[in-house]
Length: 353
Ligand code: IPM
Ligand code: MG
Image (cartoon, rainbow, N blue to C red; front, side):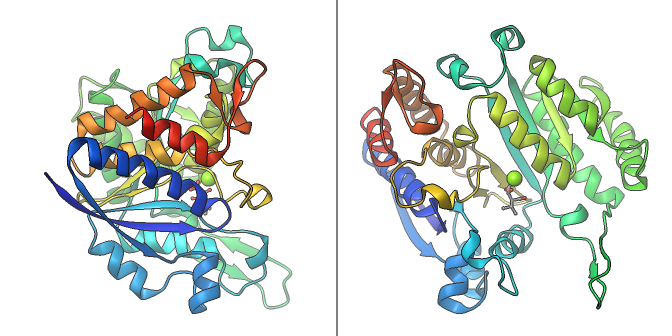
């Protein structure tokens, strides 16, 4: 028996529903494999603004740091659009506070979801299995910001150090070593100095990984290549903002942003696991959300932070089984499949553990 402390940040919008769904599945895993998962609910985002007046209370950071990992739903919503500090600031703050500089976002086209992909069959015939490795604590998200007093201009700074590029580069090369050994580094080195540094650093670093093939691609071309030939990619490594954008695109190609998990890691085993989608306030509280991205994020947590590979596989297998049985939430529904809500989807996956 093993015991783990998990901090739960349910957040806003559909966040509570999807995290509850993941907890249903984790409880089934705990029961079957005789583990104990101790959950602590903490506040971050809009709900923290409502309760404490700030998007990231100190207590949340402390509890997350004292946990074995963090499972996060989603934060944000129109209700807090005009707050001095937006909910998203809490998300960036917790990533920084926990030192989570590396964000892994896998996109895999499941055969069951081909119908849900916006791409034609012909573009999908070779499948899609890409890992987007996004730098998460640097770049324009954390650079200096200015807005002129009279509101006539505003600026954001994109800044990367060699050290920051090297450490995310290493994660990409190590990840590729366990996959097809191909890394595409995405930048805009035909225009930006920060990208020139990125490219040069990645090229230097690649000498330490002779088995891995490194190529470079401009971000505009990378977006186009994802749409016209998604199968060509193995690992994509890129900056914070480019990774944000390209991972939404790769998730859509895989069928729905509601399917895609992510792992945010630093130099310790304590990671933060979250779906890559947002809080979807338009469907919040209606039991329409797809909990699968959060459930498979929990599977990533079991494997990457807790070393529970078998348990992690059991979750992924249960998801496949439930999809094979034809169950679908609205975002992945197509004719001839069985429409279910968030709660039922999670319960079905839990039953199949
Ligand atoms: C994501 C989200 C966040 C980000 C937002 C909510 C700040 O889009 O995790 O991809 O841009 O990092
Ligand atoms: Mg995003």
